[in-house]
Length: 180
Image (cartoon, rainbow, N blue to C red; front, side, top):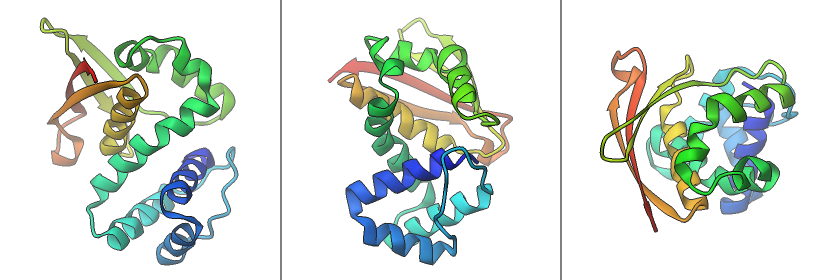
């Protein structure tokens, strides 16, 4: 996993909970915490940090990932403003993942292994989003979508209809958006 993801986690943990909590998570996870944005680090280190956070906060790991994704969006919007300002709402932002955002991520962070998405518009105006990644961080993807909705001052209803954690080939989300 790219170090930029670890840097992002450190940033949001420190903003919300303070540097002492970040240091505690590093100790509990048994990782060094020395991450450079362009570096590559074992996925197991992120898993250890998420597990340590879940234990420390007495919540499950999926909730930690959802929180992380949602809390990270303001930081991402500040760092990569052009990705956000070129869209008026959450839906077109999400639809730009495969064709605009992830190709740019690969340019900025060579070797980045980003998830794959597929999309189907539904008759009621909602969106079906397929998610595939060997990392199975579907809860993080959900958090990112929720965070994007927050950024665009919308609410979204997120229904996880299929999940790789339950043996499905990919995760499938039904997402509907409404102005806040």
